Length: 159
Image (cartoon, rainbow, N blue to C red):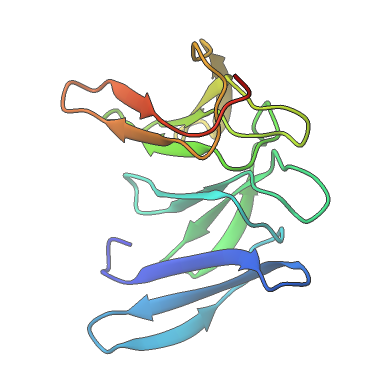
C-alpha cells in the first residue's frame, strides 16, 4: 500500500475459501486484522491503483470461478463492490497500466483456459473487453514495460 503496509486478502484454509484480510506493518513487524472482503476468494489478483485504493479481481470460491471485483480503501479500511468483470476467471493476471487503468489477462474459468482480456477504468468503475491474446493461458506473468506495453509470458495452456 502507499502507506508502506502490506494487505493480505482471502485465501484457502484447507476447508473453505476466506474473505478475511490482514495488514502487515514492516516497520513494526506486526499483523492486524482489517475489514473482510464482501466475497470469499482465492486464486485472485490484488492491485494497488494510482489513487491508493486496492482492486481485487476474480478468483475462485471453492465452487466456481468469480467475475466479482471489489475495492479496498486504506484510509477507511472498508471494502465496496465495484462492477463485475465480463468474464469469470481465476489464476489470471492484473496489471496497472501507466494511464491508471488495469489490464486483466487470461486465467481459467472452471472449464477452459482463457485468452480473453479486459480493461478496468477506475474513474468510471467499468470493464471493457479488449483484444484477445494469441494463446489461452493461466498461471502466467504479465509485466508492464517502460514503453507502456504489457509482456505476457509463460503459464500453462491446453496446447
